[in-house]
Structure formats: structure tokens, C-alpha cells
Amino acid sequence: MLTIDYIKEKGWLIFEAIVGSKAYGLNTATSDTDIRGVFVLPKEIFYSLDYYSQVSNESNDIVYYELRRFIELLAKNNPNILELLNIPDECVLYRHEVMNMVKREIFLSKLCEQTFANYAYTQIKKAFGLEKKIVNPVEKEKKSVLDFCFVHVQKEAITLQQFLAENNYKQEEIGLAAINHLRDCYNLYYSKEHIYSGVMRKVEANDVCLSSIPKGQYPVGLLYFNKDGYSLYCKKYKEYWGWVEKRNESRYNTTMSHGKNYDSKNMMHVFRLLRMAKEIATEGSINVKRQDRNFLLDIKQGKFEYDDLVKQAEKLKEDLAALFAKSDLPDEPDIQAANRLVTAMRENLYEKKIWPL
Image (cartoon, rainbow, N blue to C red; front, side):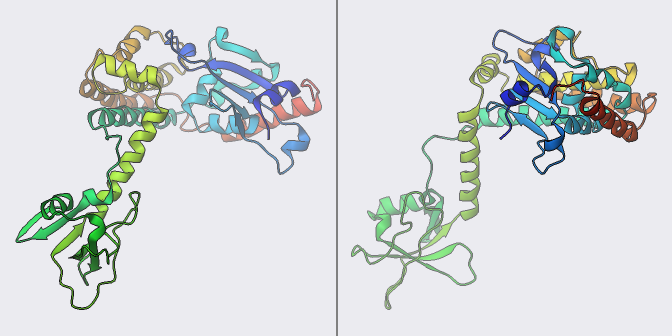
């Protein structure tokens, strides 16, 4: 298994830089250090079946891209990879001379309108997704199948739990039998002799349990199991508590402290991305170090309402269409030039021996 340390040990690394908030100039005391790099596999591995397109550490804070993958992502105008072409000098940890062959003129194109805007709107969805989780938390104690069952008796529908309590029944004493043509509906039988299998066999059951009903037994009610509702609940429960387990507590506490109920860091990146796209259209440059730092940090600190930010973002996205339409940028990256570039870089490294093997 190829690792970050092995790549560095073998001298295959040709570029490494600090990215993210520290490169944007948006870092705070709690900001992580993210690193991205480019490496080149030696001939015997590159031409074999053991090709590695990218390698990362366990936390994914450090990610290295093999040269072919790096050029491929540049040619797709991937925002995170395009940034590597103009990382501030103080953030560059290592740069091999062969990287001087990579010119942003080959890659910058009107395709950035889509890639930057689409990525920005992904961040909006993430921000709103957090709002939904904050406003609609899911209790830690998980509900069971019983909580989604209802019993029809005497022209009324009541919860199964209420039905059991009112009749002093236990769920283990209940028998269910399917009813033809009525989905998720069951005739409900009762016997204190424990001749039935109960509504569910185990607490973690995902469906009701059917029983063999002896002849001569009569139902005491009609049970409906809201199976779709239970499945949806289980999905939300898993998503919510999975999010709680993995969430960045510092980032979450920042969101809770400003009380706006949306992920303000996500919204900050929305405007960073859209403004970077605007600069690409009007200036033909990738401005990684942000001159609008104060505005972006104000967003991160929750100084704006979510709906107002969305309206501003939508207006900025609309403006991008007109700006890119009249831009001098090509419609798409020069793929032939990109192919020649990656070939020339490999030849330099493999044949001219300017790279340690």
C-alpha cells in the first residue's frame, strides 16, 4: 500500500503546499492545516497494474495526486486543484522545477462558471443540512417498530402502546395475521397463554412478526404498521447520530454561538468560490489569498441571515453567466496541450534524470 511517507522517502514528490483556510488567509486559532501535493510514480509502477491516482493519510488532511490525476483534475477545472496553480509563496512547502511547466493558461476556461458555481451550491446545501439537524434533532433513545403501529378499534385509531396500556396487554401476547389486499394491515389477536409470537420478536426488529393463528380465534382489532414511516425514521436516526459522532465540535460550537442555525463556514466558502469565479471571468486569474477577508470572516461569524446570503449568492451566480459570456477565456481547457504537458513532464523526469529514482 502506497503511503504519504513512502512517497516522500522515495523522492517522488514534485509539489507540496498548505491549502484551505491558511492559504486563503481566512484561518483562525482553531483552523486545521490541510496539505495537497503532486507526485510522480516511477516507470515500473506507472506502467504496471499498480497505478495509484491519489494517496492520503488517515484523517484526509494530507492528499497527494499522481501527475496524471493532477492534470486530469486541472483539465476539469476542479476548483480545489486549480487553486494549486496560484498558492501563496509562503504556503508552498516544496516545488520541483518541473512544476514550472504547468501554466494556468492551458487550463483556465469558461468551464469554471459551472465548476465553481456547482461547488458553491453544494456548500449551500451542506449549510442548510446543518440547519435541519439543529432545528430537528433526533432523540438518542431509538424508537422501535411498536412506536409506528396503530390499532383500529370501535371506529377509532389509537397507538398500539395506548391500546396495550388500556387493555393491560403485553406486546408478547399479541398475534398478527396478514390481511389480503391490505398492505401493512393485520388482524390483531390476543391470548395471555403466550401462544402467539408477539408484535416483534426483538427490540431491534425492523418489521412486525406474524403468528400462526389457531382455528376459532377472533381478532380483537385491526393493526396498521407504518412501515414507510419507520424506514424513514431509521434513516434520519442513522444520519443524525452519524453526523453527531463525526461533526467538528469547534465548528459546530461556532455555529451554535452565533445562533443562526446554519453552517456559517460553508456559507463563507459559497461566497469565496463565487467571487473567485467572478475574478477568473474578469481578470483571468485565480486569486487564492483573499482580499475580501473581512467580509468572508463576517459570514463565518454569523453576522448575516441565511436567507439574505442565499439571495446574494443567487444574484452573484446570475452575474457569472454574463461575465463568462463576454470573457476572453476559451470555452474549455486545451486538452491536447494538457496531454502534451503531462507527457513532457514525465519525459523530463524519466529520461533527463532531473528527478531522483
